[in-house]
Amino acid sequence: MSIQEKNAEMRKTYHDAGYTGKNVVFAVMDTGTNPVGPLRGKVTGDADGADHGTFTASVIHEYCPDAQIWAYRCDTPNAMIEAMEDVLRRAKGETRRVVINMSLSTEAERIRTAVDACVAAGIPLVCAAGNDGQEILDMYPSCFESPITVAALDNNGKRTYFSTWHGEVDFADLGQWVEGINAEGDKDRKSGTSFAAPQVAGKIGLLLSARPGMTEPEIYEALKGMSVDLDKTGRDPYTGYGFVQLPEPEETAKEETDMEERLLKLIPKPRMEGADVRELQTLLNEHGVACDVDGIFDPATDAAVRAFQEASGLAVDGIAGPKTWEALRRKASTSGAFSSYYGICTGGSVNVRAGGSTAYRVLGVAHKNDRLLVQPGKGWPQVAAVLHGSIVVGYMSGKYIRRLDNAL
Image (cartoon, rainbow, N blue to C red; front, side, top):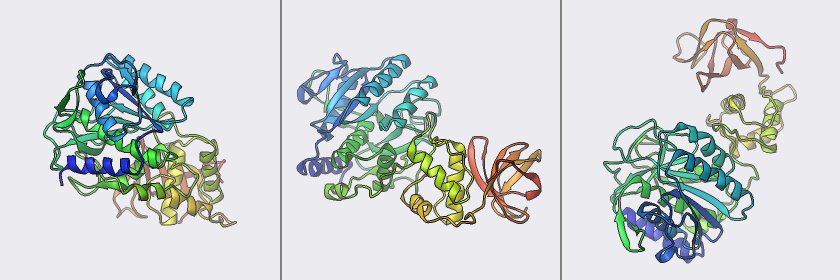
């Protein structure tokens, strides 16, 4: 079965089950959207649109025919920032779920704050990888970590020759000879990652129709679990985790999480924050993993989560998901399960290794006064540290560690 047929079958199955996007609004940040053909009555905002934005919105409409479209014309970085700020403002008073589709790009990295703010507010932001046909590392928002970046596939599930690749590509979908409508409302076909992105945005809309309570991190994790691997095993820079294959709608509706917590993880500023982060930090401390309790999921909290996961035999990914929460909620030992403490590196350049001796490979290098989260051990204690912007969990010679006064 072709990719086009698979997507059509997914749409029909969800529509037949009553999931049509009634509770979803799509903010289409593009060239504006004309309310023509099936889009009549669905579009508000910059309605004097060109082909590109109208076509993009029509692809989303195929997935979620009862969803509303907030249309934005984003010709400049300032217009992109203003559009995202407007969506943040409107979303606060909105009972429906909001999803952003951004099938455009800029070299202006200054849009990062607005992008991250949308994602931190729980708004999924889907964007196109680009059409350069090579590795590009300075086009935004696709090269940021926080949005969901989509590459293009042909109808046989192969990456198209024009699809840009880089390490932040998350998923891939049909982007060659996609069917939609132009600015006059006539049927048309277009190619580009611009038209792969709204396929994934539309699938998110169907998920939210069935499970309206999903958080943005939960949506992302669900998409990962639904993806069919395409290029290389696991995530790769060409097609990310692969093609998103939605499960049967009955399965999706039954998969409402048993937990009330968000999936907590480190994201670029603004950080995730709230009472659930404070609870996470409190539980980490109860288990003896030193962590400031300030309600902000910062790099130090990420390091603490990874240290706890490592010591608990869990997958070390820094994400406070169901298994990590379950382990944290088990009663902590009164003596402190891990008895960790804060320390600093006293050496000029000290290797953090994969094991407790110089025979193990080097994972990173700590420098003088770098802060460490230390789990006591003879000779080579386990440490977690933020080194050159990355979280490193490994082992370090104890003679280069000094315990801080505020250690637990």
